[in-house]
Amino acid sequence: MAVTMVPPERMLPDVLPTERLNRRAMPTRSLRDELRRIPVVRNAFTVVMAIGQTFVVVAAAVIIDTWWAWIGAFVLMGRGHCLLNILAHEAAHRLLFPNRRLNDGVGRWLLAYPSLQAFNAYRRAHFAHHRDEMGPDEPDLALYRGYPIPVDSWHRKLRRDLFGDSARKNLQSLGRAIVRRNPEALQILAVQLVLLGVSIAVGEPLAYVVWLGSWCTLWKFSNRLRAIAEHGGMERSPDRRRTTHVIRQSRLARFTMVPYNT
Image 1 (tube, helix red, strand yellow):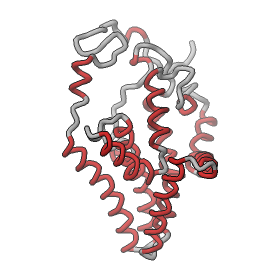
Image 2 (cartoon, helix red, strand yellow; image 1 turned 180 degrees about the vertical axis):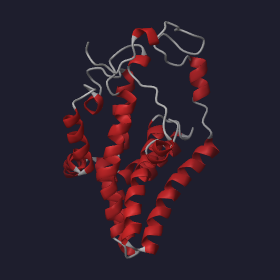
Image 3 (cartoon, rainbow, N blue to C red; image 1 turned 90 degrees about the horizontal axis):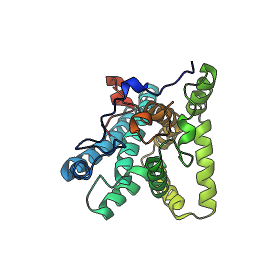
Image 4 (cartoon, rainbow, N blue to C red; image 1 turned 180 degrees about the horizontal axis):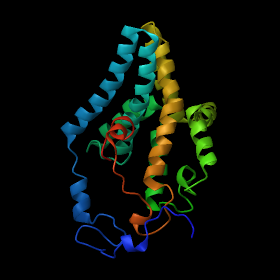
């Protein structure tokens, strides 16, 4: 029998549609309206805390200025990239703030661009993902297609992430976009230059090296794990229970990779 990660039919009783879910297990209009009620104050506090935590970690490393402080900052910056990228995801869905200009401005300049995420391109690709998860036009299919995979293949993928090879390809793509003078790529470059400039101005260029290095390694590693945990080994189906896993997170995972319930 073929190995699969898709739940067997006996675990997927035919209970749809319901008052709150349609045949595809998607929210009905009433539930969708309920889910789209945006808690502005709470979200603003969450954004401030995400940025603040990241700043405090870097500031602590600068003040302590020992090898172990910088290693700790490097590790925690992986979490910092998770914080910013997850909130940028919420902004891409226009769920951070009801005012679109504020939502997109915060999503771009304070969340996505500091973590080298092309906000507009991500929004287009992510909406394509939701339109047909695991389908032929799925932009993220390479991240979670074909699971379960052999152990040696799995280890190769993780090594590429942890040793910066995956990031190298992303940075090369960003570099080509900058050469073409793509507006969003230039905006990302501008934000990165500001971060580098600030680190030089305070006399600690190592702070930016830690920020970029953590993105090139730990963020790529955790992003792959998150993607596989959500969709690895699933299949194209109108039933979202066959496209997306239900995941119970450990406390360690909640702290490091999935700090928000999104």
